[in-house]
Image 1 (cartoon, rainbow, N blue to C red):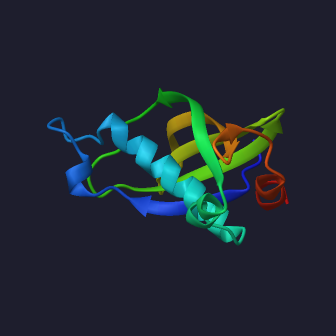
Image 2: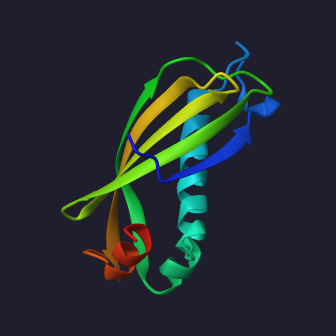
Image 3: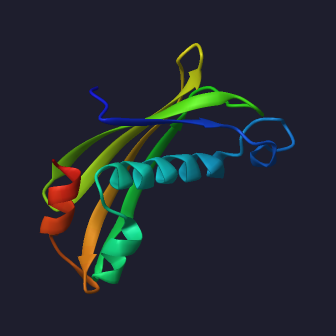
Length: 130
């Protein structure tokens, strides 16, 4: 897979459950934050697009948990992207550092609502597919 964006993060203690591992719901936060940073790296923001009546919304998420992250672990979140019809399909993987162990693998499908209706977005095409 060819990744087009990555960001480094660190597990915070409050993200861990009683077993001392990252609670599964936090992985959604990690990959969402990665998508937001990716969009900003392309010169746009979800908030600005929303103000113009264009919203990218999650339609489907597939998650695979491989190895747990623990408190204070550093990791890198990477993404790849392709367009399938009306959908943007993000392939997002998380690797523990420094050993690059695959921790989490996901596929996130986004669709666009333009003025509240499902539609293609030339603005998102321009930003995401450059």
